[in-house]
Length: 282
Image (cartoon, rainbow, N blue to C red; front, top):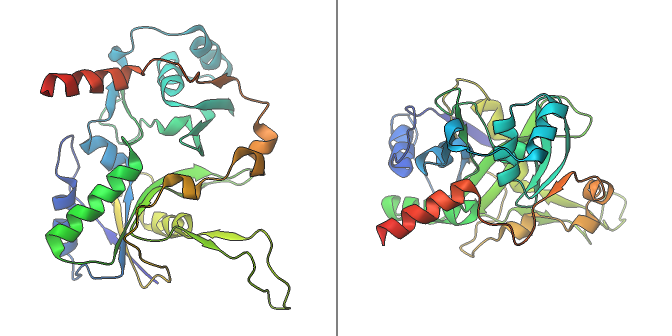
């Protein structure tokens, strides 16, 4: 496999991300080809979607937000945004909350201050990541005439008891994200019973060595010669998610939640703003 770092200009709200990616690839001695996979960091996607919230947009701090902020030494505004974005909050350590967001265990519900453009700004998770990955792939195919192109929207996460971050695929289009090894035989002929390989996550982890987490300005990595199956079918995020009662970690954590978002909960502040903007366009 080959990994190529794609450095881009600084990405701003409402920029055309597809043109930026393709132009940045063309500036290198490199040409996008069938069989390539583009791993794209979630933060620039969120920025082009204007998924940025300012601290002064938070008008009310809930009691649970105050409690979490005091317990984990965090800003009450930050914890309030996390509460609005998270599906479940399981606990945390100083400065970080462990949350579930769209079926993924992730820090702070994916809310991030790094590369947000200011101390009082927060970047949220991309809007509808799976549909976004599909749309990016369709636009690239339309602009390049290629067919077998994979798109992975990437984020970072931590592992229990391990230092440092690894990659996680939050959405995939164009490739099969999971390799189900159950039924295959090991070196000694014994059938595998539970093994599945998270191909998309592994590709992201390799890419993040180049992407970095600071000022590298490499939000895209082109990955070539990957032994995966390309597909035109619609990939569902649920295909990469394991049921809670089957998950080694969630089966342990299930009774530890300090906050669960009720099903009937009204739209978050950010979603209300998006809904209002959509209504104004109509």
